[in-house]
Length: 332
Image (cartoon, rainbow, N blue to C red):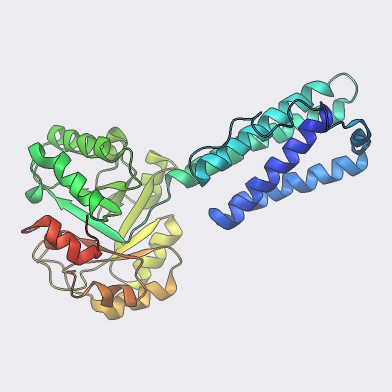
C-alpha cells in the first residue's frame, strides 16, 4: 500500500509540475511543486522507504486494468486539479500508514498534504484569472436593452468576443446589479470574462470575473484587498509612469487610450499609437487598446504590441452581427 501511494504521489507531482511549467506558465507554483518533489527525493534517500519496491506485485494488482480508475474528463484545468487531489489522497494514506512505525515520515507526508492544499488554491486562482483580451466588448448603458440582453450576449459569444465590460453610468445600482447578474448567468458556460467598470462592489455581488478601474477610481491595491486574488483587475492608463505604477500595484491588464477620436468618450484626449507602442514595450502584463477602434484600424493596434482591442460603439451601432463579422473575421 505504501509503495502504491508513493508512486501515485510522485507521478501526480510530476504532472502538476509540468502543468505549472508548460500549460499555466506560473513560476511561483512551479517553484512550490519542485520543492516538494525535491523534499520527497531527499526523504526517500534518507529513509528505507525505497526498499518497499521489493514488495511490489504489479502483475496481480487489481488496480492494474486500464478501466479500474475513472478516466480524466474535461480540459487541462480539470486534469491538474484531479492530479492534485490524487496527491493529497496519497499523502493522507502515507501519513496514516507511517503513524505507528515512523513518526518522522508521517509528519513529512502531513506537511506535504497541507502544502498541496495551498498549491491547489494557487491553481484555482490562476484558472479563475485566465482571460483572453483579444476582442474586448464594452457594453455601455446606452447600448443595452435588458429585454434583449441574453440574445445580445449569445451573439457576442457566437461571433468571437473574448471579454465583456459592463459600463453603466446613468442607471440605479439596483438596475445595474440586475443587469450584471443576467449577463454573468448568460456567460457561465463560456470562457468569456465579465468585467465591471469602476464598481468593485457590483463586481463582487454579481460574481463577475473582475473590475476595470480608471485613474480616479479606487486604488488597485485597495480593490485587491476588497476582491481578493482571484479577481481580474484592469486599469486605464495614459502615460508610461501610470502604466508602470499600475503593473507594480498588481493590475492584471492595462487599457490604453483613446487611440483614435471616440464618440463614446469625446472628452478623452487622444494619446495615439506611439504611446501604445511605448507602453507595450515597458510592461509585462497584457495591454488593450481602446478608443475609436474599428475593423479598419484594429490591425494597426495589434501591430503595436497590444494583446487585444476594446470596442464599444463600432460593435453596438447598427447591425451587431455584421460589425462583429468584420471585427473578428468569424462567421457564426
